[in-house]
Amino acid sequence: MKSAVLVFPGINRERDMARTLRLVSGGEPAMVWHAETALPAGTDLVVIPGGFSYGDYLRCGAIAARAPIMDAVRAHAARGGLVLAVCNGFQIACEAGLLPGVLMRNAALKFICRDIFLKVERSDTPFTRGYNAGQVIKVPTAHGEGNYTADADTIARLEGEGRVAFRYTAPDGRLDPQWNVNGSSNAIAGILNERGNVLGLMPHPENHVEASIGSTDGRGLFAGLTQHFDKAA
Amino acid sequence: MKARVTVTLRPGILDPQGKAIEGALKSLGVGGIASVRQGKVFDIEIDGADKARAEAALKEAAEKLLANTVIENYRIEVTG
Image (cartoon, rainbow over all chains, first blue to last red; front, side, top):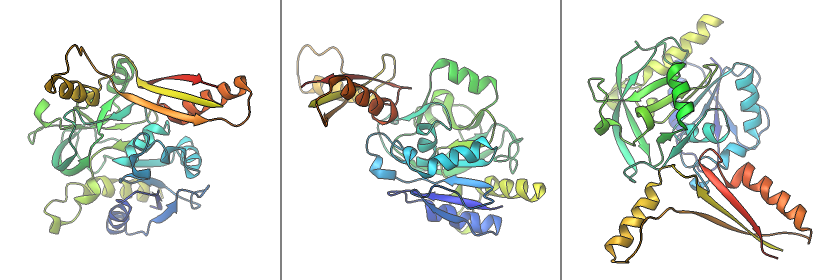
């Protein structure tokens, strides 16, 4: 799997992401600066990592979404290439029009930095094939603006087309407003685009891939992606 | 020329920041406040004196960057 991690000013999770990609896929990811206009030849997976691009000025992800590299990312997605957008990356992907909707200020107005539980809604995507449908994973979250919102038609389409990939739940997989930490519509934590090749996800699976951290629940996402490309090759 | 672009949340979009400000005003004892919705103001200086061209540029700026039209409305004023 050839992966490329985008780097914007103010991003701070790119090295965690690169470390995880190296560890799980065995390949060295390319780090791609936002001012570039092309991705490295043969890129399979583009990762938009988390952080605070441009200091969250204007709206989270708004300025990064207009960076020169994003035209190449849109072209990659239009060709069916995979894009994984995590945290600020999810916000950037929404602002760039790669995914519908928007991530608003958390309903409780607080920055949330702790482990949360996600239910994997389906296992038949390149991003979730490393999990079983219905499986609950524990991963860290760290954001102030993760409250997923879209108009009622968009939410109905996401649900109807099975494009909600991850949902915030209680540890036993039960939907519970108390565990929907940021107040997202329908407890949505991660969504797919129409074609299923772009995933936006608010929490950080890349930080739970090593036993020394206390959980390897995030590993399935990267192991699944690696398998996806190994099989295709 | 000077211009102002005002960006506000669309009606019906939940505004937790506005709600917090509303609560703070009420706790300060400021009377008669029914509700608060917050937004952004951009004061922009325009090159040249062509008002129609200025309005077109401001509309482009608002659509491309200043507002996220999924959740926000914008208003353009060229103030001369």
